Length: 146
Image 1: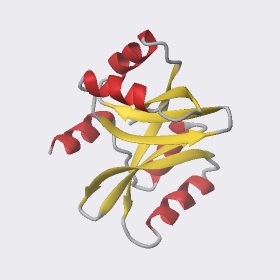
Image 2: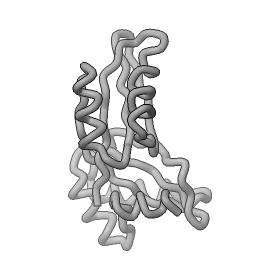
Image 3: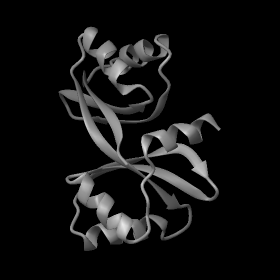
Image 4: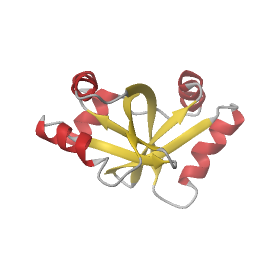
């Protein structure tokens, strides 16, 4: 029930994000969600694409440093307290949340968030105990295909 994320290290300068985005676009990779974080010296572009192995190879062949990490995609009720309920389960299980960001996909009043945990397997187990089933890659792509 994990989704692979690509993290690219970029120089912190104008236009740095354009090159990898254009490369992915030209090779027909659709970026399903992304996050951009920065520091004074560099930025990190994090993204989820369908065929992450080929995208990783493409980017590395173009000189990018690419790291693959596991994300957990979770449907969250799109109402006040929806995220708080998910976080309460994780806090009780003592799972550390490193960061998260959203997908633009929405399904029947529920949003979809991508979470990066220190221990994704423990997070999935804790959520599953409470009847919260993370969305796996295959199901995620089916939803995007309509």
